[in-house]
Length: 323
Ligand code: HPA
Ligand code: ZN
Image (cartoon, rainbow, N blue to C red; front, side):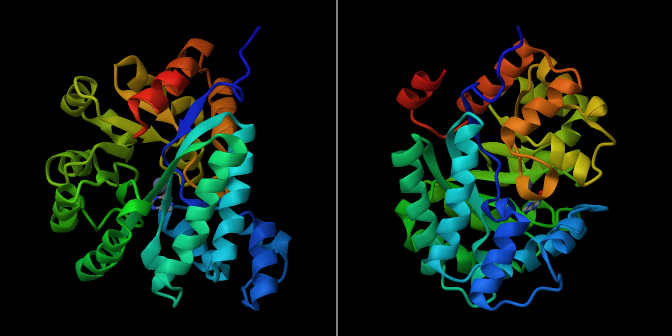
């Protein structure tokens, strides 16, 4: 009998917490906070969850997060995520947040952080989910803004596992942010970056060689570069691949043609994650189910889940307990 993919212990390492805002939560927060959205109701908002590319998604993603104002709002959003994640077998989650997107519209950094850190603590108490928060730098914002937000992250050193790099990829190569990533490395943060989602495989090379990242987010376009596949397979660098996201944003035509399983068989440490599950059709367990329909075997599912735990920043003891 096929294994229960929801019960397979797994780590979620590529999850934008603002991408877990389901339409009903957006509407609930908009009503509570008196935020006007260009959508009359939940159905109209849900109908907008269809995208031609990354930028079209980001436009909606940033407009929906305007409903998040107070620490309680961030706490509600993250708590709902953790409850769903727990039901899909997530035991460890390293969640992304986009502080510049909140501070830039007048929300205090500490307000955002208070809600998220409370939800992280509650997740461990209520669901046994370990992990923490990775603050992402928006690559389509100026470098000075990246340094300014990094100063705030550093001022709350103990609340973050690491820093990441996200938002519109293509005209913004990783090397624009070398200085801020160098600072983060010196300060002892883990470093990750989105690379090779819409951007070319060369962005994966520069994320590794100029940003010094410990992990690559997406990285699916590594499949186009034989030398890079060899390098990744010979290293401990994991790729946090998000199959439903790649189909939703038209990076790959369908799951049957997704490079995930090919990269796995070449020895690259790929895993399955969910990216922005409220927008892309499912949470991490749903991504596993969809990949099964596209041909993933149970043995491959077990290796992918294992890679998620091995590729996490959990302690050696925690990893041993989850493997
Ligand atoms: N790609 C880049 N930036 C993002 C994404 C994504 O899928 N989701 C939220 N920010
Ligand atoms: Zn992402």
